Image 1 (cartoon, rainbow, N blue to C red):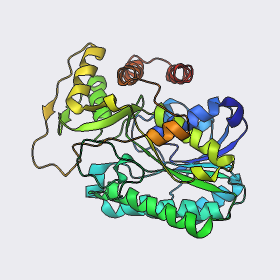
Image 2 (image 1 turned 30 degrees about the vertical axis):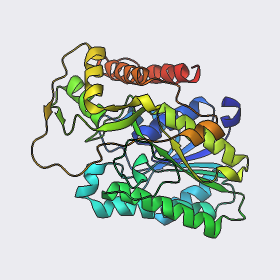
Image 3 (image 1 turned 45 degrees about the vertical axis):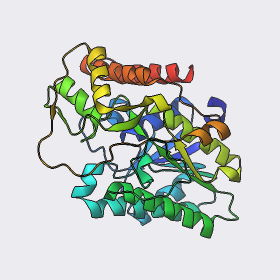
Image 4 (image 1 turned 120 degrees about the vertical axis):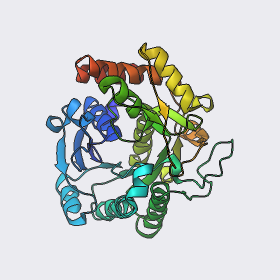
Length: 349
């Protein structure tokens, strides 16, 4: 992997976010020349600052809805590979801010595609969406890439719309292009440095680190949990195939955990309680809550077969690594060293 990425010019949108920061840091470790384009970090604390990424990558603060500014950035940097992670990525926020959610997730994606098609240097584009793009029927088997798209809430639906926009652009403008574009759908990612609102693990560790009140909406909801490094590894493998001009890979891909790692929220809470070795006190949130899927699983057989990708970490390992990171934060450890060690551990699995 290092041989491929060393010296590659890589543009990441959303590099100030949780997954974007992990990806930017990992690519720098592999020797890539990284440019990031995103809004300033939305939370305090945040992983972007924890890892001192502003001094490690070419960081451009901007809004992906600003096509003129984004196009200038792309033209100036001349990337070979683009990862699009910038998004309004929270289900509950999408109920409060549906217009923002659609404009960021749909128009933002269109702006990426528009800028890329005007830039000859780009050979490989991976657009990150979500496992929630599927029309969720709450059934017990996992969704494959060919299942019907849908999405109940504005976030999920806007990401399904983004998938359709990618398909239309691919058909309309990239049929004979040297640039190949794929979409990637991952499950509920966990890992150190996520401080987002209304997400289970950030909420839990905020309560443990800062003694904030912990409210749980539905302890019986089942999600496909995985460490952030798992789908990022899949995104990079996919980007390599696209860069090599293998057109078969220019389509949608699932990157989900093993079947046995789709667990209920309550199971996750009990596991963290044992690892952290301190009480994890929580209560059920009161009042009427917005609709959220109760059961969702991904089928990643295609990625395993065609990309030689499969999860390396058990869910126990993923939770343990996540807890170790937040414990390191609480104890004021060197987070750059801690993050580096976790990536090296993952790569050596």
